[in-house]
Amino acid sequence: MKTLKNILTSVVMAAALSGASTAAFSKPAGEAAVTAAVEGTIASLEQALSLLEKGGDSEAVSKAIAAARQQQKEFRFEVTERQRQRAANTIVRAATELKAGNLQPAEQSVREALASFKEMKATYDKTH
Image 1: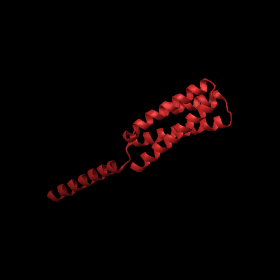
Image 2: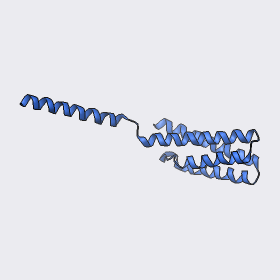
Image 3: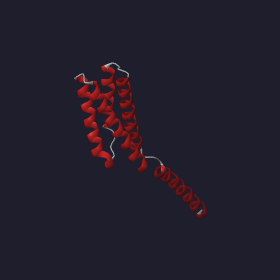
Image 4: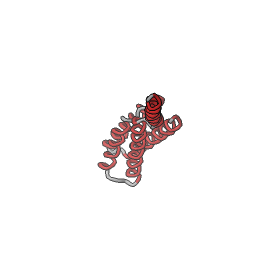
């Protein structure tokens, strides 16, 4: 009986340790959301820039910029938080210029925001 109890205890301990080790080595769920947010922001800004370069519809460019504004809100990384806020302001400036019909300044603002988010992603990737 004592041997059976020891075997059962060993099996339970092994199961508990294997369950804990998978949780410890798995990627945090929040990390995937942050990565998706920055990649989505970059993709939206690239789409807006492409449309601006081709002389695309202002409505489509505006939608791409709006998507970037929404997606960037989910990118939370303490090291780059101030840079993210400045880049968000640049996105707002691009949207304002686009509404005013100033395509050249809007394109420049989108380029600045895109470069900034690519830099933030590189910083984020280095630490994760």
